[in-house]
Image (cartoon, rainbow, N blue to C red; front, side, top):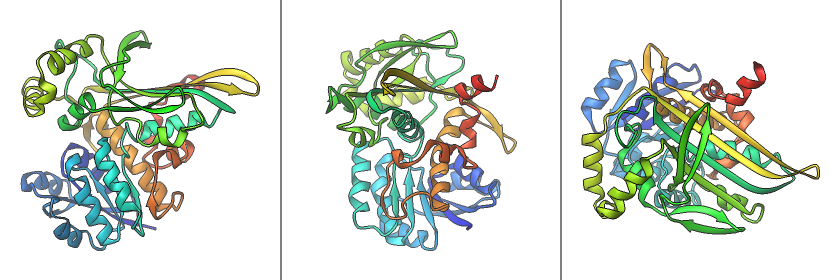
Length: 368
């Protein structure tokens, strides 16, 4: 069955999602945005567009009539408006938000919808929750599950050792908002930038620390089944110390507008990036204490004659993999749908999940 998809948001991620859908025989795609210059870039690629104000739920719902599904690739603060419009239009709803408050608003709306509402479908939250849940299922009893994810420049040149690869607003939220976790069997909120640790992969040292939103609903799902669940962001060593200076010592956690201006003025964007997913679970299996890791390392690549960053590819593949499973009837068609309801093997078997397969490090080792 061919699906008609509307993407709300013509930014970098919206463009990537649209390109992938355009190349599929299973979808037709339209991109909606208020920005005419952004829509012009989309039209130049031969993709249909609509000019619409996403903050006006009533007007947007009219524009969404007739679509099977809506994907929000807009800023997180527009999430409630877009979700409400999708519900009114009778379309399935997906988004990429890591914002907890926005996700809670979508969950509330999903109680009264006749279509599926599935937020947090990108990389983290999103794919990492699918991978983490798959690891957890391999144990008879689970002791701990730790998920680490980073989107990093391949060639860092500044003191932060970082380039902008994602939404600046979303990045600042991750650094400033409380973080969900399970500690000693209890749901807890932890402070961002804390629980510092070092990990190494392929001879490269990284640092990790708490950030907000990456776990999605996984702690709720695993509550009562595990002692500890955590999510931390991966960066190159030295990044966290500078962030604490900016946010705490200089007080920019209270001036997010100024912090955004500083980041967008001083930190260039790059397509030369790497996305590292590093999940580890420990528990009992067949009477033995066991540990298992899942590692996925993705790089920027050329698709359709254009170079796309690793964060664009993994984020777009994250949402489109679950959209494709919904189209195939392998996910619930109504109400709130969690990432951990997706089977990793099913996801990787979709035409879009295959983009993650190239970064499946352990599968490459097994094949070597």
